[in-house]
Length: 278
Image (cartoon, rainbow, N blue to C red; front, top):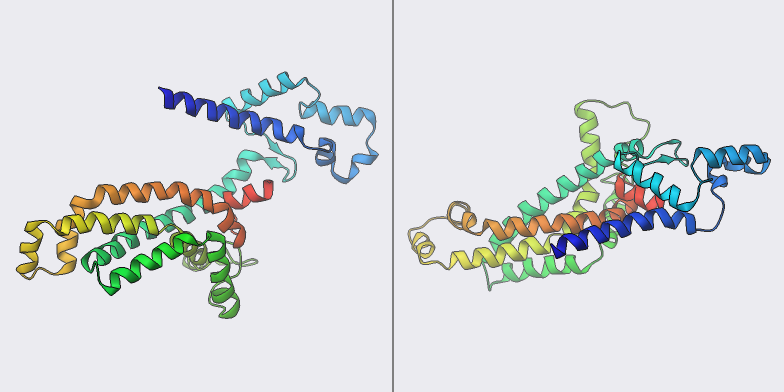
């Protein structure tokens, strides 16, 4: 119950700040509503614009209108983009979902594979190399990893595009369009995957190392059962819960890093939209 109260308070605080911050900032909303023509508006036109946006009402009334709009799914109107906010978000959400789904799938799969390799070879050179590599990636900022990948793979070697989610001015469709999207997706996905790989790898290593020490697995190894079959068929099912938990927790970290990564690659997702809005 106490946790639910904390969530409610945090949600209410976020809504209040979202309402208050634009109104506390310096400047007049008329400049955004009317653009460069604001200086030529008559007093009647100014009043009409403010009334249309609901800015002529007292703050409590504006706040009530704001909450009522949110309750019915009305996120407001973007005067900068000349479109409803819901429509602007609808254009960006699919790109972010694609980026999140791809990167987190890679994180979970690579985490299991690398964790299994480290657990199988624990205490040896390969184990040390895997652990050192993922911990180093975890220590580096995601935007820095993205900038390095961009500088080397896109600028110096020209293997990948510099920005965007699709090539501009292209008429590609079908399979060609999908290939183009994946080509643009590669570097942002690699950046998020590298930044979020440490947790799943270390959890998988610890979980699988404990399972691999069980007597029945030692007996299977003595019978000549190979590493892949032993891990996939016997060890992994018993260690899957903490691995999946670590991968799920990584989704939150990926969402937090998305604005930086999408900004580095000018990727048209929600993270980039947040950056532009700020």
